Image (cartoon, rainbow, N blue to C red; front, top):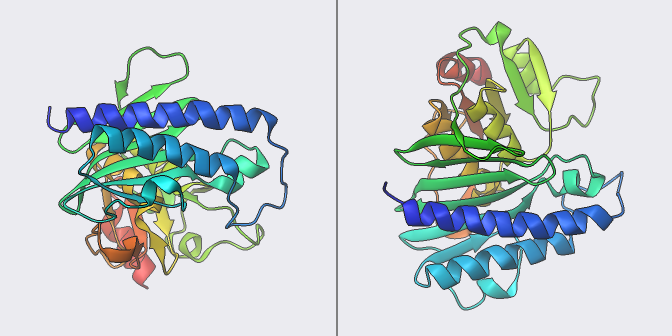
Length: 269
């Protein structure tokens, strides 16, 4: 299978990081009012484990990651082959100790995501995909992975929208107002949200931030597409990775594919 070596490296790196994160998580003192930009020693140590392993395995590849750590020094940050890492996506979920965080590792080949791994340490769930090789899941004590498919929901009014936690819980978000789904589920971590769409546990995910980074969505992007769904910007743009600055500025819509066009139209209105 194409990218088999890259997939196995991503899985191993993510699992090594998850083991370290759980050790920190066990003794971490909960921060109920954690800020959105919180960073912990677990973030930085997790990133170092991942980057060191990937650099040893693929020394010529570029490395792009969220935290400023030693392994990013002296290496290319962009290139035709690039690893994109978020060592703890949803650090607020880690800090609040609600389990809503993930380790995200992606491999980008020529600007397109070829491999993605989203591992949820606290819930012992892993979702991964290879371009052209499908999307797979492995939970808890399961010894073998099983294939993932997106949902078959065809009506937005019957759909489940997954989104970030609301700042004002009593006030629906503007995507919820525009889409009018049957149910809204909130969680930290874009990786978790994208994995839920890929697994068929949610039908829609909308990211409305005007600016975010490749590591926020890269690994989860390929999960949704390989599970049969669709991912674009909020105006239907193709998302590209590996550009200087690793900045995304088109928002994101991830769906089961069947709902994509109608969701785009409602969001534009």
